[in-house]
Length: 258
Ligand code: 8Y7
Image (cartoon, rainbow, N blue to C red; front, side):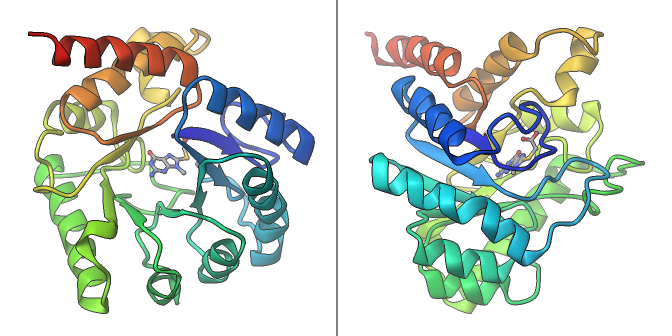
């Protein structure tokens, strides 16, 4: 899954892809490098980022969703927590709903259900604005798993097909470096047999591991993606599609040999 941020203030691409043409060029590059899914988000979840109105978020993402679907044969994933954005996104050809708030916002569960699309439910402790202030867990692995299993059950109770649900431990969302590492180490079988999506790409945990704020995080991100896929992750959400696809090709070759 290749990441396309269309926020003016996003983490790593600093608003470079804020025009439709640039966004579509970036999509073309990611698809050529082997991405199967493009995740597009119009609300920054960066700690301290400003709230974005429903209209503003739709104005950012819908033209890009339409543009991608008219030019490319791919699956568009929509990173949103807002019910209205989910509904409009579904009407514009979105193929997956990626909700970092796991369908807990008002109307989001109903909107996702109505769309009949697959959904990714992510774990987050707290809210984006404050989540990194002092995250605390007694047992991060069992608490994250319990939350995800509860949210999955809430979706199934609401009428969703369990096969349509992806789960995500939410690396970096209300988690210290130690929490992130423990979750990665114990990713295998985190939530039974639901497919896992993971996002670690260029996250701050790598600056901490590398002991440098200025170091390039690409190789570290690719390594972490590989470790997650080895532990059973089905989808990895990444900025750097080409090196990730190459690393996964090596893993696959090894897995398939005698
Ligand atoms: C994740 C995500 C972000 C993630 C899923 C960033 C939107 C922060 N991270 N969605 N979104 N999982 N499912 O650094 O880890 O990319 S935004």
